[in-house]
Length: 165
Image 1 (cartoon, one colour):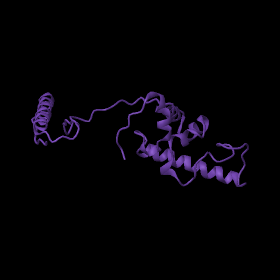
Image 2 (cartoon, rainbow, N blue to C red):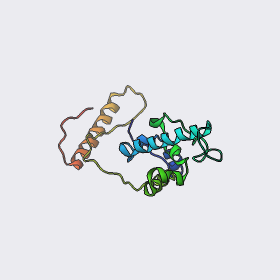
Image 3 (cartoon, one colour):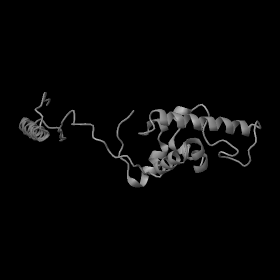
Image 4 (cartoon, rainbow, N blue to C red):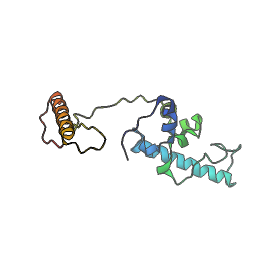
């Protein structure tokens, strides 16, 4: 839930298309729920047409078949599901500007920058080394970590409230 994922540029589009709509920043609240509901509504109508309850020509997609996702799975719809309906149908559902933004996201693009929320809540330093029973090496490692933490605290400008080694 939440978190941060580092994704190489080459795989950003595939990564974003696989994400559930309601987990993508900017689509986590009303905007994402409204899009998911509209897509679910579209899927219900596609199923009715497929079952012979409506008109619609062609196979697949918005004009005559299932757009590739079920009508009751709004919370699990992905950006890829949204884009699978095609640009024209997406624009009819959410408007041209919103459709363009979703398509840009699906291509790995994002206009939103990283927003700093304030100073770090914690400062840490760690080091890994092979198992050893050499007490002198342990002491030297702890002194080095303590010195690193003190430098980081000084650079941060706030006095530490608690130090844990």
